[in-house]
Length: 393
Image (cartoon, rainbow, N blue to C red; front, side, top):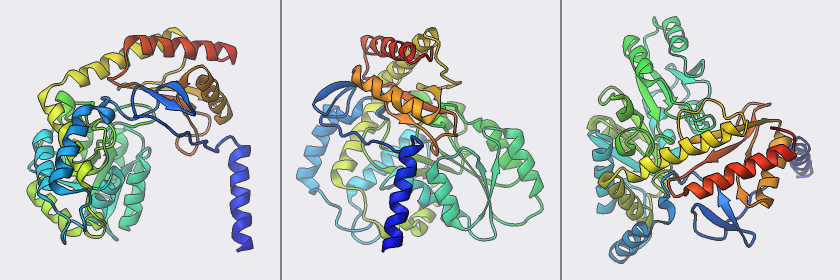
């Protein structure tokens, strides 16, 4: 016990000394463009609430109605007694929205990756994974037991080289990539990745966590964005970002989803999504099916903020989406910048190693469709003030 305590104490001390210790702030209001933290109102620039749906009253109305009809808890895993007609309705609507034959809802986006990868490949098989894939993809790949081969970030030629090097091996092969990479906002070159996978007889999977509700027609995602329907074997999505709720899902052919229902451990061994979550997600899908207004507002806000930040002289990388990384360098600098922003009225957390490479610590700004032009102008002016005070711009 003493050894364990020493190890924990030393590790916490190291994190603090290297500026990697994260102070977790508590929000005391509804999630939205402005939030209350420690009794103070702050402009929220670090939530994944892309479309502002977290506190949309239409979601609450749907929840209340469904709670009256179904209660709150599911009571079991999906395969025993935890599948309600509400779950089936959400899966049907998600499949329709994504343009696939079927979908399976699980507890989170993280669980969706854990549900998809291990049933498809195992020991003796090969996974070809983008070197900057999300931690949930990495963990799912490790859990599968398959051999993991990383290819250079967003490099179709790099993927081809790795695939070519293992072309003679007769085993299951899976290419996996994020759709939108959340730290830099860049988009996977999915057409090229699909062509490479098809050429070398590999399955392909895309985790569209930051593409759902953002890319494609009315937010239908990266596969729709590139017109690749029917050519991507597995589409993983999350319901906790643009959809504004909680949960994850996998969409694909009816046969693929039927197979994963039988094999995916989160589906077999963890209770299904709660009634309020399912109801709120249903409302979000219906809102997105009705109009693309929120998606268009999100992109308009992202464009405006990037223009303002470039004029202020900040390094905002090469994002292709509304995600705006403000790259500051060392972790300690980013932490201080975040603290100063908070005192000036802005909630924007610093992100450092191991989430991003050392020397690229940043404030990742997540604009929302719920932000107004005045909010973003105030934010850019405040970033500029703090940047000048710290000698960064």
